[in-house]
Figure (cartoon, one colour):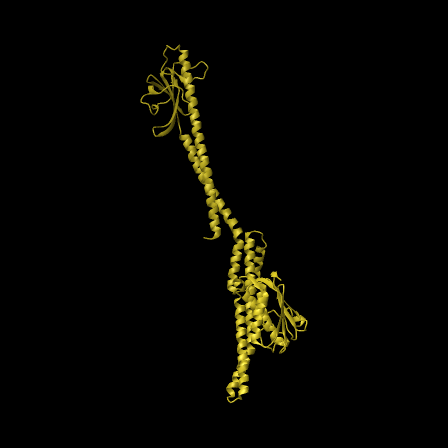
Length: 471
């Protein structure tokens, strides 16, 4: 079942339940009012006849007997309730007056003795007894009252009219509740259709993205819809904005992967070509002098090392797990620099001069060591043999300066890009990924990378990180 159908059904059920509660309350209230109306009618009639019986007894002088329990003649005021001693029926009521087991009534139907008594003489005077009875298969409401002189006045009225009203009320409420439920379901369908339209558009967009392989370049219409939905200031707008942002990041990641593969393929051609040429030379020249053979083997070894570094850096960039694995701790930056310098001093004879002050930053020591190592490796690659490398650490700023040709001003903003290599350095070894990895690590740490000219004329490349403590 679709969300629209569920919402429409929910609207209909809510309307039906509300109508049922209103109907039940109205039915109960109406039933109570009808019962009260009948009871008031019965009480009024009983009191009226009881008063007339007493009045007629007084007119007859007490000791004289009239025609039956109700006396003999109509009242002189014209409001006669008796005719020839018989109660006059009115308002669909049955009136019965019993005295000394002699009864006169307005109908051929005889009213029963009130419940709880064996004879009419046992009914105590003064109280009004009201009960439901059944006469010839029809329901009645009966009121009984005993008056002075041993007389009992009973009035019964049929409840068929009240029952008809209740039945009609139930039928009308059933029709009204059904109509209201259908109307609410229809309105719910319309509201749900309008409310879920952005969700359907986002679903269509997601399907289109899946069909296109994850790119958004071929989805201008769908992206326009997503942008329009994202402009809303409600939950749908937030969802659309999040979805659009996710799609843009997905597209950027896809393009980034394509660029990585393209650039990696371009970078791999040179060392692979060199390896193939050197291997072919070894195959063709089986009796090369030892020094030439060692030279070729050294070149192959160098190319293999470069390929290994390239593959390691490509895997590091492709997996891009730094954000996930980043667990910052206080790191003493100058201690990390000392570790890197010690390793490079064992690796090469190049002097490295360090000028440092204690700087504590919030970061990952392994990542920071990798970034500093790449900066030193980059300086070592471009510095002339025997030229020193200077490292300066001060208040979260790390600067690595070499004595090489420097970085042209136009390329300083590009050196941290993946596989970037200037025209003057394309013949030199390297993958072009070292500074790109530095930039990513520094970005994860909330810092900035920069490249400028060193005081000695070479390149000054480094980064700045937020400081926790500095001496």
